[in-house]
Length: 178
Image (cartoon, rainbow, N blue to C red):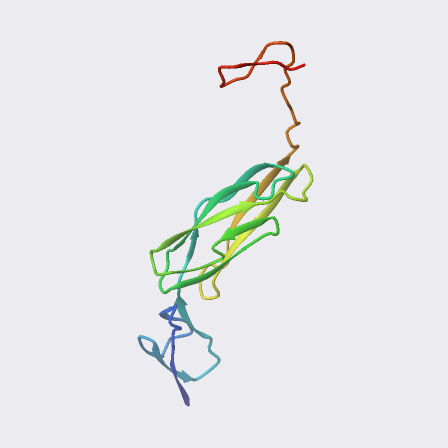
């Protein structure tokens, strides 16, 4: 019968783990397999690569509706796999992350500043997410839920004093308002 000879080649960000499927009767030597085609077979090369770990399942912010950068928090990304994690941080429209990309060796981690903007939003609760992705990661994308509760702006207030001898705070002299 016909014999096929395969070699699994990992990308630089990945590592070969082994062969799965109909490997009975095959000669396996690491990333190399010789397959006798004596019938229909399904054989798969299995690889591992970088893995995304994100701190916290969600981030929650409260901000007044007019705020440009209303609140800040942090997102931590860690590479728990093998190979370099080259990732992009993709937030929803009213959320931003800085820096928007990163590159981590196995075991390394990085902090990203997360900001939300309530500018142009109405008073209510908004739910969104931040996705962290690398096409070679074993668990892409990683997702963190983001909640923004917008509140009414505080009412303006002012203190006014009048009279003949009104003391000015922080001074020794007496002032008069007429």
